[in-house]
Length: 123
Length: 165
Image (cartoon, rainbow over all chains, first blue to last red):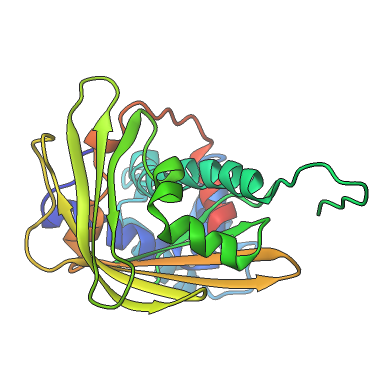
């Protein structure tokens, strides 16, 4: 995934900002199981409809959800590709570091290994 | 087994990696500052660290290079140490040298890499903070060239929710 240009960077930023809120993450989790209307999405929260709609707008702007305008109740649905992009990006960072750190674990174990003695304790 | 590395984004141009190690802080420090140790662990699957020149003091320079096992291509990083406070903190400027790879990050200001170590009950916590010159530099630092060969088959949303919680 080669990232270049302002557009993609901005998209990532919108995505991360959208994901930074627990309510929005919960909304995404709900939508991962299927499309839902604003009313349905608001049910688990003690939150006014306008407040939920505000969250939905942030998610829509980030491209994480979309709305079926033709349907009468205009359900929202998850746009998984945008989310995949963000997760994949953050995962790549993590993977790069984790690979190295696992090798470091092995080295540290090696450095701490002592030749066998009578009273030997290992943490 | 230590907890795997965690990645957070403290700002729009930073990446922060946190990891614990079952070892005293001095050892983790040594592993990061002695070339003979650094060569054994730092880097990328499929690449060997061919150069690890390090003059670990304020104002001292370093050069790291990796060589691909597949085709011998090389790339690396270089820069200067700006803070050295063993065994708890070390900061360096990091410039990318694309070498044979044919792509690169925006030229200009370096990434500032800061490493902080703390120890409790024989477990060392490492916090590595990378502050890029810009959003674009940060976002572009992870690119296909370096990460080809990694396979990801996660349940995307689950993992993200876990990481973000």
